[in-house]
Amino acid sequence: MADQFDSPVDVEADEQGLPGLAQMAVAVGIAVFTLAMINAHALAAWADGLEPGARTARISAVAHGLADQTEARGLDKPRAALKQQWDRVKAARWPNQASRKDQR
Amino acid sequence: MLFPTLDFGLFFLPVLLLVWTVGLASNEWRKIILLLASWVFYGFWDWRFVALLIASAAINWGCARAIQTRLDDDRSAQPWLGVGVAANLAILGTFKYFGFFLEQLAPILARAGWGRDLPVLEIILPVGISFFTFQGMSYLIDIARRQTAPASFLDLTLLMSFFPHLVAGPIVRASHLVPQFQSVPKLTRGMVATALILICWGLFKKAVIASELATGLVDKTFFDPAAHSGPDLALGAYGYAVQIYCDFSAYSDMAVGLAALLGYRFPRNFDQPYRAASLQEFWRRWHISLSSWLRDYLYISLGGNRGGVWFICRNLMITMLLGGFWHGAKWTFLIWGALHGGVLAIERLWREWRPEGLPALPRPIAILIIFHIVVAGWIFFRADTLEGALAYFTQLWAFRPGLALASPLLCGLIALGLAIHFTPPTLLPAMARRVAAWPAPALGLAAGLAVLLTDAMRFEGVAAFIYYQF
Image: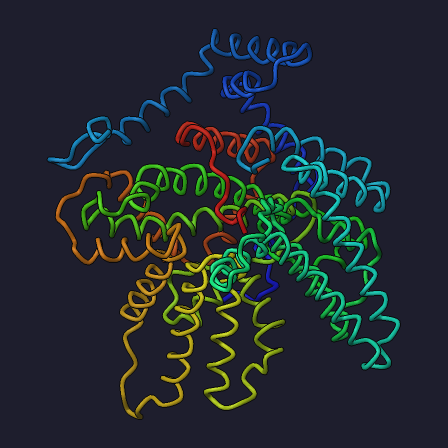
């Protein structure tokens, strides 16, 4: 069992290559870029939830512009496909079990 | 502001950038940036409570100074420790327990004819108050016990306000975190890899496992137990065991991961709790920062293991009752604490008086028994009222046949949540060592895809973490 002050991040790893800070900066940057490209709709949905105002309108326009551009290039398809598969798994029922809609 | 939201992501990225640019040149500025960011984070709930947080830090800082200057004479230091602990308890009592006591007092006073003029106060509970007041108390006790050095006002305020642990722990002690505040931390590749794995895994546990189980099964079975079959209720209870583990450990994982990206090491808060073969072992694996807090500052203060076996049982019972009460001013939490205290006492008596030569239970059977005791406790913990908990047990006992709510996915998520407990304990460090060797772009791409996967599977909207209410 762990000691009460052990930290899970105390991992002795090979420190060769980029130093930790640079590794983090590049990794976080790439992760944010990846999400902005393939999940831009999440940003647009977030912008839609902001309180209406002049600044919000500009943010919303940028977010929706990005979402439209990534959609036009088909970059939103992986997420849509994943969601579709997940919804299918969610809808699955045991034999003789009513569907979720029927339960309501 | 909840961790698994875009709001938090858009808050965290600029903080991370500032901390590793401006904060690299000056450690004082780094701490000021973190402190201001923590207040902004807390202010998202209610700006007024930022003042409470600052006042609480100021009181603890002042009392610690008073204790420190009188440490040579124990008798003059003790009153300041008393004042500090009482001030923390007063804050906690006012915001968390005032309404409960008034509620219990009302019928008694009414019977005596004095009940009509009782004040009706709707006190809003500041998020995370139980965590930062406990942190303040442990700091004062550690100073009095000479177990930690006094911190500067900036360090103590940052310790109590630091946003990764502010609202739901882990309860990080001054002796652990303040020394880390003394210099600009160094980030290693191992820390970065572990942090990103913990954040992605925490997101998945909260947004997919815990949220799906809550909305699809647990909330429905606990709302109206009489409307559901025995198998659904049993799976609802197991589902809550998995939900609360995935919810709370997800928060801790993300807190540890976010702090690590900022350069700080938080202690582990969970260690596969449902693989415990005794309740004592369970408490060494569940909410470790609270259980070790209760042990070090309450159980030991009560006398700990120093007396006879009945004295130890008394201490266990008091500690667990107060541990239950810490979670909230409700009878269900008290019963949950009493159940745990009672079983811990029975375990202790059994160890003392177990007949010689009696073989010990095989470990898998002991794990199964302890798991079911814990699940029984969770029914009290989850139910809104005592009547609700008893109704749940009654309907479970009646065990009407049928399976309407628990779909294959929900059963699979319960199985997954339990299977996590039986993976090798070295899995995370082994994965982190492997991932740390990856080139940074591959690591970033993998993290982005992991978040995308969770986002595609997540339930619409994110419910607050269960432990936010404590």
